[in-house]
Image (cartoon, rainbow, N blue to C red; front, side):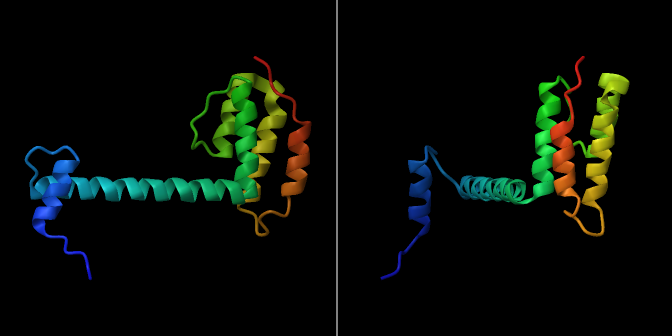
Length: 133
């Protein structure tokens, strides 16, 4: 026996959600809110999965964290090239190693064999000292 979801049952559902005199417009807003929420949750899940499975993004995330701890505030979406410029501006010549490393990381992202140089970049990352202000 299938569920018969009539107009009155739909409006009753809206009343249960707190609408005093629900209308079709209210129902469309609720459905739109559900769709937007699901889309945002899906996008967040995709981003989270990508961060967990993409070694290049993980390494960039670790670099961002260390730079943030050193006092560099940068937009979350800043690419490595922009981070290199910010590092040089904020810390001067002492941060040249960081800037060079970030540019190598960016070049690796677009290399013909992506991932090939990541082990070397990870080792180099471990050797970078945090710039001080």
